[in-house]
Image (cartoon, rainbow, N blue to C red; front, side, top):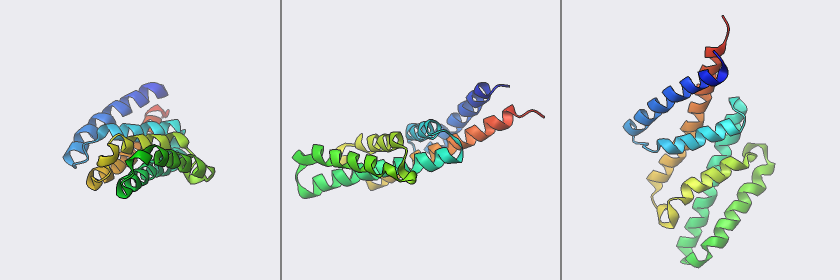
Length: 155
């Protein structure tokens, strides 16, 4: 079996399982997990893909959360655009460090938290669940990759 077919089978099965399990464990944001998975794959897969996608994605989430929190707590929502610009600057600037070097994951993480808008930042439980879903998605991508490789090995 070729790698694409094996990956398609592994991905199809694991996404179906992830959708079901994520609802059962009250992390019903399966689609955020798919962002984590996509970042893992875009970062090249394997252990290096995990090492690049997860820290950068979480950094993007934290940077946007901090920007939104500052805007809200200071009462200056008219400065939100500047604070989000600063958060983006930070996410890109720290990409000089290997741990945070995968900028697309940082932007995905930023978008995931940013989608909740400024008021969404106060829903800490949901934001933590979004972070967990992103990380688990990258890990599930790693598992799918490993399963696909096993399926393509010749006996």
